[in-house]
Every structure is written in C-alpha cells, then in structure tokens.
Length: 325
Image (cartoon, rainbow, N blue to C red):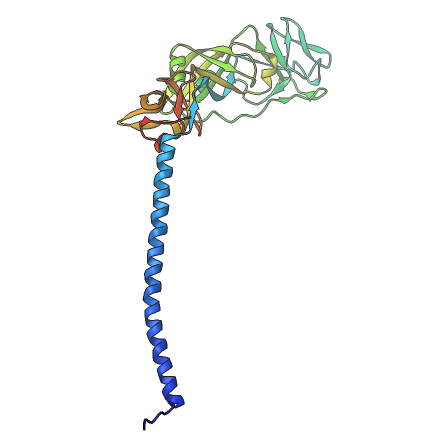
C-alpha cells in the first residue's frame, strides 16, 4: 500500500521560501524593464511635443509694428560761469547799508551802497551784488581753461550783512559791467552728434526740462579722450546767476527721425544688422542701420519704415514661410 505522509512544518516552510524567491527573482527585472520602457515613452513624447511646439512658433511668430519716433540725444552739462567783475570797497570806516541784498541792475553813477552816509556809486552800468565768494580777481578764463583736471573749488557767494561795520578798504560787493557775454566752461561726454555740433560752432541747450531750446555759441573746444571741453557764450545773462559760479543745463543734439523696434527683433548675421521683415506669408532678413536707445528698444534710421511688421524674437524664427493668421 502507498504510504501517504503529510510533510512536516520544516519541509513546508522550506518549499514556500523557495517559491517566493523564484517569484521575486522574476518581478525585479520586469519592474526595471517596464520602468525603462515607460521613461523612454515619456521622454520621446516630451521631445516630440517640444519639436512640434518649436515648429509651431516658427510658423506662428510673435510680430510687432515699427513705431515712428523722433530721437533727440540729451546730455547733462555741469560747468562753471565766467564773467568780468569789479569789486567795490568801503571809502571809510563805518556801517554799510544796501537797498537790496539781491543782485540787481544799476546805472552808471547810481548809489549801490552807503557807508555812514557816504555813497558808493557804480562806475559803469551793470549788475551789483552785495556778496562775495573769495574768487573775485582769480576766477578768470586764463586760469580755468588750461589743463584736464577738475575746476578749482569755490563756494556760493555769501552776502555782506546789511548794517555791518566795515573798515576803509573792506570789500562790500561786486559790480558786473553790462553789457557783456555770459560765458561757460564745461566738460561733456563725447558723442558723434555732439562733436559734429561743436565743430559747427554751436550747441543747443535747455535750462528747464520742458523749457525753450536756446543756442549757445562755441568760442573754443578741446577733445580730451572721451570728453569734450567747451567754452561757450550763453544766450542770456540774468542777474540771478551771480549767486553762484556753477551752471547746469541739458545739451540737445542728434535730432533724428526713424522707427523703434524691440531690441530682441534685431540680430547680427554675417556682420550685418537686420530684422526679419514680414511680407505677406514670408519672412526675409532685411539689413538696417541704427543704434540702441535704451535697455529694451532699438532705433532704426534706415532699412524699414513706420508700420513695417517685424518678428519680435528674431532668434526664435527662421527665414521663410509663416502663418500669422
């Protein structure tokens, strides 16, 4: 008779462990294989989508119209003023009195001050200012023009106090004869357009942001590296300018008409600047001339007209057919 015996606990446990090892040994390679296959599918899908997206953007580029603009180059001018002046002194000891503490126009022979009743008169028509800055007699063209360094230090004119006691010979104010030209010496950043104007013996200036443009004559100039030193005749001379020897304004130059496009629309190809000009359903690389006017825009002086349609991001689109609509 056959002998049927139930395997003991040890034998059953040993068989179960071997089966588990066999099953686990097959599952791990399968998981790795399916993981790699899934990754390949996902990467391929993403790559195909990016290729489609790139092709879509190439056929449907973002475009912009060239806008008509007028470009005016504006440079800051910070210089010093030069004028001919005379100093007036107290004729004797005493207390000085003035009609006004402000610079004002006076006629020849007019009393500008009095020292204990003794009149001090203007010897010539001009502007009288009862103030001094210590540079009287030293602030002259021959000492300011030579050299390439900064201008000598100076302070704002300090008024002589009305009612102050003076000794004979003490200075009590300055007289600036009129008429005379008000002159200015300044260093300016060198640009092509500014150098062109300077060589034509004039520059246009503006003393207020939205003020009137006025023309200043160039008496002399010197090119020093990237700076241009100019000696100007200003087209005005109000008495209020006597309060300080400094002068600031804006210089306007390079009044050009053209168009503006984003700087991303301009590229350099084969040594030539250009844009992708859209005509109908095609784009063509068209050469231009111009220069950047700020961080984001390019000023075009030649090559395209106002209203011309160009590709906004030239580096993302190839030349050829496009589908804008």
